Image (cartoon, rainbow, N blue to C red):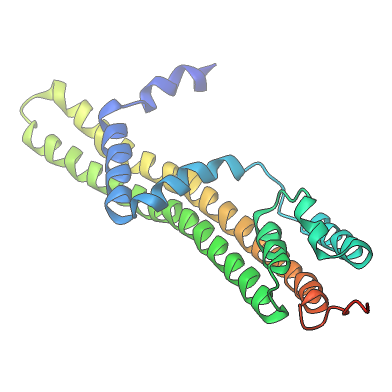
Amino acid sequence: MSLIASLPAFLDPAAAAIVGGGTILATVLRTPMRDLSRGVVALKTLGRTPFDASALVTQVEALSRITARHGVMQLDRSVIADPDVAAGVAAIVDGADAASVRTLVEDRRIVRFERQRAAAEMWAAAAEFAPAMGMVGTLIGLVRLFTSMTDPAAIGGAMAIAVLATLYGALVGNLICLPVAARLKRLARAECVERGRLVEPLARLAAREAPGLRPVAVA
């Protein structure tokens, strides 16, 4: 109960405003707007398990069996939820060769990774700014302390800003922003590696169904 009763002593709106507002402002000024929105939206992925491409690889193998039996045009009727697989299959239906499909899927994989990395870097930047804003709050508190030495009633408030701003900056940076950035980076790396497993199955399917390699019907 003593710890809970002492919690109000650790709450200071001025220190919180300096650290929170300063961190947000610095992050906004440093990060492009599109990456800011991606960083916020990426919070929805924090609770997800790392991406596993096994189900998509199995789907590509199933699509390969369909084309072997019924022809490549049957792929137009297939329901493909994943955008990368859908793009690769669409290129195959249009007659793209293996090299083109491989390049397409690789490019989409890299672009996806770069978007996810940009979101993680936004949180990494916030993790850098928060302790710095804490130091700014400490300096502001010390200035208020030195300018109010003749007013004992104001000394406590100035000291609270000076001490709590540093505390808030350390907590926000190391307990919130840095773990979020690290988690997003791990998820992005895992998905990038897993999506690499889709390249060769799609390229093999394209190589087999390329117009120059399809069997010609004999009249």
